[in-house]
Structure formats: C-alpha cells, structure tokens
Length: 231
Image 1 (cartoon, rainbow, N blue to C red):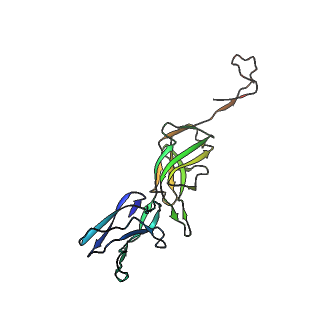
Image 2: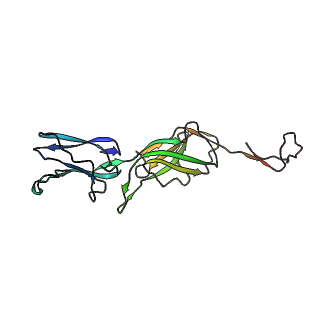
Image 3: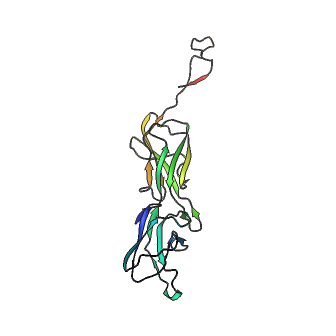
C-alpha cells in the first residue's frame, strides 16, 4: 500500500473472541519505536473482520511521520499478562505530498535575472534518518513549453516542512521570451510520484540600454547624460 499522510484509511483485522480494550500503534522506523494512534479502542463484539479508521502517519499527539516501512499493531492492553495478544501488519508506505503551489501563478511574469519567491504548501511529516526525525527534502525544477526539466539554481536539496514553504530564486533563468513555463516541486525520495507542477507562467527578458550618443540635458525627451534606461 502507498498512502498519503493525513488521509483516512482503515486498519483491518480478523478477531475471534472478546479481546477487551485494544491499543493501536504505529512505527515509522521499522519497529524501533512505537507511537500511539489513539485512545484505548474497544472493538465491536462478535467474531469476524474489524476496522479502525486512521489519519495515516499521525499519532495521538498530532506528531506526523512518513515512512516507506510503516508498521501498525493492535494489542489487548487490559488483558492479564499471560493473555495479552499483539498483531502487527506487514510494512507499507506513508508518503508526503505537495498540496499547492501559490507562487508562481498563471498570471506571473518573472524577469530574467530578478529574485522571485517560489511558495508551496506541503502535506508532510518527519522521517527517520537512522538517528533522528528530520524533514524530507524537495527539489525545484522548471520546464519550458513542456520540454525537459531544468534545475532551479540552488533549489536542489531543500527542507520541506508541513505547511507553507518559501524559496528565493535568485537570478531567474535566462529563458528569453518563455511564455509556457511550469515549475515543479518534487520530493527527492519520490520524484516520480510525489510532485506538483505550477500553473503556466512567463519568463521575460530584462532589457537595459545605454543610449548612444549620450543625450544632453537639453534633449527634448528630458534624458540625463550618461544614464542607463531599463525597458
């Protein structure tokens, strides 16, 4: 299974006989540590299949975790020690997603060489590095008229927290008169299935001209001698 963090999914199991109150937990680091999903849970009476709805990757304290080796388990915590049972799932995936890109928009016109802010909203959580919980990384790329992707300068390895993220693109790429540009935010761990493309926007040239011969103060245009003028 490949779930998106925060989306609702059923944890399912088969039960025979009463097990009393149960505890739902998940592990996002291969079983090294376990986090409680919710308060004590009393399954419905009777034998057969049971389910519990879970916002994937989120624990009872609202901590958010992502993992490609996620586990869940159910224990009957109130039983006597010699009657306690624990059942664990096979590993599955809980991954982040990019919800929106709010800059650039479909009406953005960015000039070559300027500094512009890329803004995206992530639906994310922390992953286990082997020694600590860390933010996942994203990369920023752009394409012109549906062509191949090109890396945004300096945007190849960025932290992406849950919520709003910003990156200043210093020196927007020299794409001349590109009217069909899209920008992509992609997770480094999952670049082919966890990404989002922006609306189509424009990159336009910045033109700076030094008028020659130099105008004088008596010019009918009112231009100042030796000045540079940007169109």
